[in-house]
Image 1 (cartoon, rainbow over the protein chains, first blue to last red):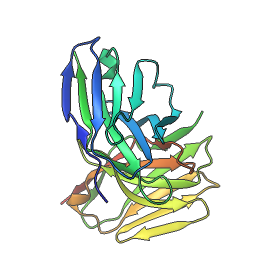
Image 2: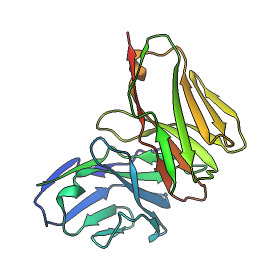
Image 3: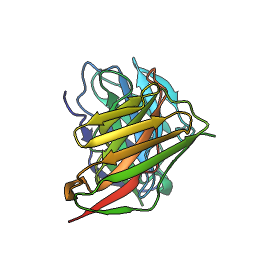
Length: 113
Length: 112
């Protein structure tokens, strides 16, 4: 099965700036997820996305976060006004066949200065 | 609240020995329990899944047990190799495409 591809691999931004992280390209998959991992900490669920709608979201996924699938293939995570504590690895994932086995992308490392 | 506990301290074992990693959980009734491997700077990679009605699952040198009464899973790597050195994550899954919740992971170091 095709891997999940994420861009950028690393982004450095100033606090307060908007950031868009992308999963590209993905086809024929319905369920997508965003997770994040702060350095040295656990992988944390942010949001799941099904059929172009948010299916489930965590407490972390507040108003500064949004997800969309703007052109039917790319799947994006937007952080509107970044904070220092948003510095983390952000992983996109999809489910494969059967249960909720996740296939993760390589991640996008976000550094907020 | 739901809690997943894995040994926070690193596990160091000699090459060729069996590594055993523990995952305990509370306030959760998962339909499935999954194990992933994560290398530094990389995304988790799925290894094994065990269902709530299964006691044991094997895949090559890997074995997972699942005790829903004890709320515990054990993950074994037999004949360990230096290439097995990584962080291993336990993950709980309620099924139905709901979120998968990860533990903090245990770092395994296999010493040649």
